Length: 182
Picture: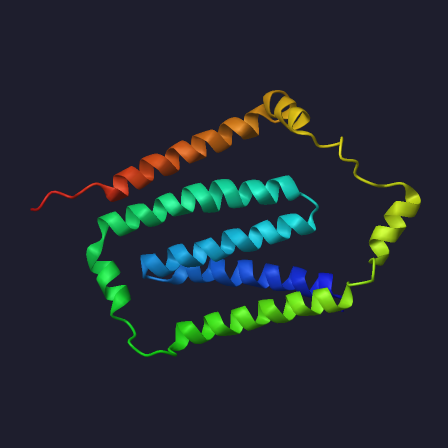
């Protein structure tokens, strides 16, 4: 198996596994952080689909905006769950820290392998596309063309995303408001 296939399956398994944990966990704080991992894994999968603009947009809008807004709303609204999260482990190497260490070592190994193998090597799919003339030119996806497509070809998707972001903003405001004491 090549490095591309390994990374693709790693991103896919990370996205599916984290998504399953998001919907099955009862702790909202951990579910939000796993949702963070799902969004990053999906951005990695978008890169494999050669949709780099969508991957960057995924990271900037969903991770940078929506998820951070959800985390702030959670932190402002639910102090009991946050205190419970802090008291779960006092050990230096508990299970979540081991998982983080394994993930960090895996990423370090993948990056090291990629640097070592691809230092003086151009993958076959790149050389084949160069020979066939199937190359994306810098003028193919300019900001002007993307903006033009947003207001013509993709206007419905653009409006659906804006409504989704508005719903997330309203939901975060609803979560962060204080409940009346009965």
